[in-house]
Length: 133
Image (tube, rainbow, N blue to C red; front, side, top):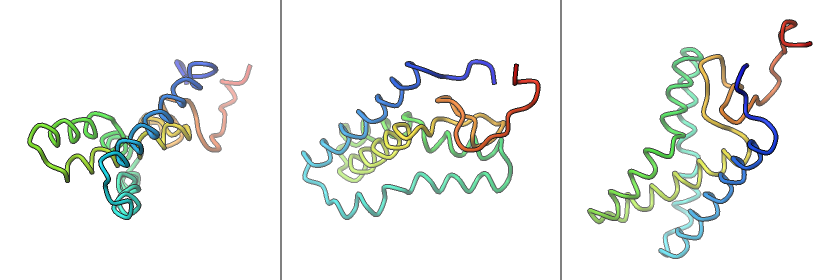
């Protein structure tokens, strides 16, 4: 795959994800929110993986929708403007989840398959003979 993220850039992107995870957890603690709620909802964005049952393209769209910071940050902003503690809580948990995934190397997906991410390939993906040179 051309344009694959590698080397120092990949490490920096994963460290950014870790920083978001830590910042979201610190904010969650600062707002004195319930950690059992955090534990219950932390993996909710991964329900989007069910989209892969209908194919890689739909799977990538559903995964990326649930794993983009756009929705999580929108939840936080709306939660503070309205104000809505539930949206604040959801936004922090959502940001923490995305940061966790990015720190582990699970980036936004390309329609070629689950293992093709903006952070590089993950998992066991066979290399085509034409790619080996």
